[in-house]
Image (cartoon, rainbow, N blue to C red; front, side, top):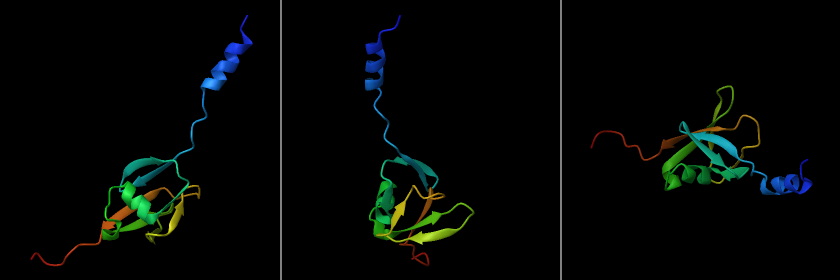
Length: 96
């Protein structure tokens, strides 16, 4: 015979897990709990600081790539948004 209080206590101990989103930035996986982040926040998450030295692109399912502005909000709950690529902006031409 099982004790009904044991079942209740077991349920109370199992706190619901926070929803998280899995994204890839430059082929590195990240788990985030925010549903939406700005381009700047995504760059900072990837350690690209200061963010203004980098460009952020999102790759949609199907291969389409689009630039993400620093203050542009990206919501991970939208289907197909999960892969991001960064590009350094301080590249110089020539070797000197």
